[in-house]
Every structure is written in C-alpha cells, then in structure tokens.
Length: 513
Image 1 (cartoon, rainbow, N blue to C red):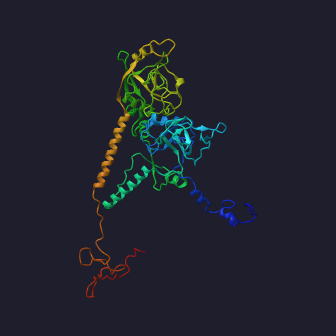
Image 2: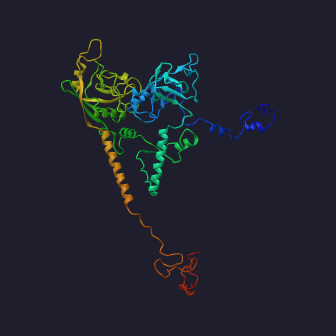
Image 3: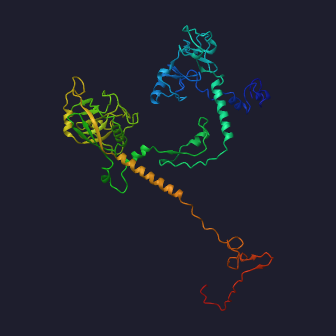
C-alpha cells in the first residue's frame, strides 16, 4: 500500500505497530492519553480572560504562589463590571494589585524567550516572574536571589509561578485536601446515613415550550458538559411584560384600553417652578418608556441640566453629567430602537418626546423635546411620548439665551423632580403577582387534600364477598357459572340453585323475522 518501504496490498505488522505511522485502532486512544491535562488550556502567551495573545500583560497573584496572566485591556473592564472580583478564583482583586509583566521577545520573529539563556518559551517550560520587577524568566535562570536584568535583589516569596506543567499541588492545598477528607470520614462515621427526599422543583411561570437543546449539544459536542435531563428555555420576563403592554386586552377595543396602557409624568423644572406634563406611549415603545420610568424612579433625572438648545428645533436633557456625552440606560448597556415597530409614533408635532442617540441601537438616558415637526428624524430616533401640558414652559425654554458660538443655554435650567402619576408596568407587575399567588394557593390546596379512595371490588376471585363468608350472587349459565361455588372444609360443595327456564310454545308474532 506504499507505506514506508512496503508495497504490499495489506498492512504489515511493522506498519500496524507504528513503525511507519499509526495505523492501528488504538492510535486515537493512545494520542488522547498523551494529550496535555485539560486544566492547562490557556497558552503561556495568551490572556486567561480572552484566550487571545496579549499586548499589555499583567499578572494577578494568587495565594498559593501562582499567578494568572491577563491583558490589561481585558481585565480592567472586567473588574469594573464585577466589583473587583478575580475572574477565575473569585477572590477580591483590585487594579492596584496587578503586576505589569516584562517579556523578552526576539526582534525577528517576536517569539517569547528567556532573557538570560535565550531559550524560547513553550508549553513545557517552567515560567516564573519576579513580583518586584515584573521580569519573566525560566525557573532555571533565577539563581542567587538577584534579578539579573534589573540588578535588584528579590526574596523567595517574590517568585510567582506563571506556568509549571510538571508541578504538583502545593503543601498547603494537599494538607487542606487531606484534612477535608479526614473530616468527611469522621462525619460519615458519626452520623447514620440519611436519605432526604428531593422535593419536586417548581415550574417557572415564564417557561417556554421550546427545548434548550442542551442534551443534543452535549451528545454531539465534547466541549459541552454531558446532560441527560431535558430542559426548556425561559422567556425573558421583561419581554413578556413589553408584549403584554403592546397588545390590547382581548374583548376590549383599543380605544377603550389605550389610556390604561400609557404613563403620565410631570417634569418639574427650575424655571420658576414650571412643569412639563408628558404622556408616554407605552404601547408603542414599551422598552423605551420602561427605561425612562425606571430611571426616573431611581432619581437619575433629578437635577439634570438642559444642556443643549436649538431654537426652532429642540431642547435636550437627561445627562446626569451635564456634558451631553454621559448617561446610561436602566440596564447599564445601550438598548434597541423601537421606531420600526408597528404603529410607531412620528415627529409630527410640537412637543414630541424622543430618545437621543449616537446611531442605531445606542439609546441611553438622554432625550429631547421638539419645538416643531421634524419628519427627517423618523426612523432614526424612537418617539415615546408627547407634551400634554405646560406649553408656556416650553415656550420659555425655547426663548432662553445661548452662550456665544455654542448650543448651551446661558442660564442653567434643570429638572428638579419627576413625578409619576400612572405607570402601566407597575399595574402589570401587581396583576402578575396576584395571579402567581392564587396559582400557588390552589396548588398548595390541591396538595393538602387527601387522595380520593378508589372504589374497590367487593367480590374476590372465588365469588366470596369481601368481609363475609357467604358467596355472592352470580348470574348462572354461560361463562363464570361456577364462580358461585363455595368449597367447604369437609370436601363438600354447595351450589346456588339456578331458576328453571320457562319453555316457550308457539311461533310468536314473527316480529323478529
């Protein structure tokens, strides 16, 4: 077959054993056994958070003397978002605790190497770093207690292990494992085995009829943990609420129900205590209105400055920083636009309330109120309300003087308070809570009721009535005519006398013919 020096039409013994390549059925198993440990998955030149080659490496020191390498551009946003928590060990980690690492690279290829022996780093290298200087070496190059690159002395506890493929668990962790095993054995010996009955998990109210696909994914992919239990997806609770608010209640007309599905708020300004009364179109832009109401309840709009004014066009506010570049949504991330929904509102009149953005799907907290129709902003900004009271205050805002060469009002006007008079989302949450409580009570009542006793047979297989010694009356003749027989202890039997049938005479009335 052309393998090695053999041209035979079959695989020879030398080829089967691997002398000229792997041709046996066990070659895959052997290769799997020789593969690296699954715990050593992060390459030595990559960030442990993004698994991509790092450009600004830093090290997070662990309590066992090891260190985890991250890229600075990845770990800083993680710490801000997760309250200074280590992404792997879940231990507290401050940005000031990160140690900047200094790797040596070859100028031609950019390959990482040891600065003393010039040996290139690989997945089999024992790589360490000095905490005081941040220089990275092979473990065999740090001898004498002095950093040879920076010429700075260091102690043994300053050495951080970044990669040790042949290292064993530390003595502290080993002793902790042994101690926990001893404690577990003592607890098992002291306590008798008890078996707790696992209660049936409650079914979430927002469960969907669609499968999560986890059992199938775990069957066909080795990167997914095995799963044998079927699981179903869960609908997003907020999306269900938005859908309920958007759709009118059945058996009612849209005109009768639209007032209950809208919110009414009042923006109190510092311009002589004047107010702007606003109606929010919760049925046309539910997510945008919900974002506005939740930010108002959290006090994010209190003391907000009207930072931009274009007379004859609009006035803009909603930035807590007052610069026009800040402000974030209720969820902390930009959310989608809703100007493409069915029946979306337009910039068709004065006093229209819409979201300010920096492009598609970049809505945050800033909004603006128009001074005239602006059809050119349709399909670009989400309209979620309109002015229903306070036209005089809006006129005064339009007439405010501007700073020279800018769009900022010369006089500082702020939103002092946001009063909410009607919130359909709160009403929905109350209805849902009542519905779930009633459902839980009915389920609890059904579980507390004793099970109904099924009516059992009163006659056993031998024709004896249960609870008595007398035979039951059974119709005679045909199948089962001997069920009425009761066998006595002396060997005699007693049968139930069958009534005699009357003999018919004559031919009848021929009705059956």
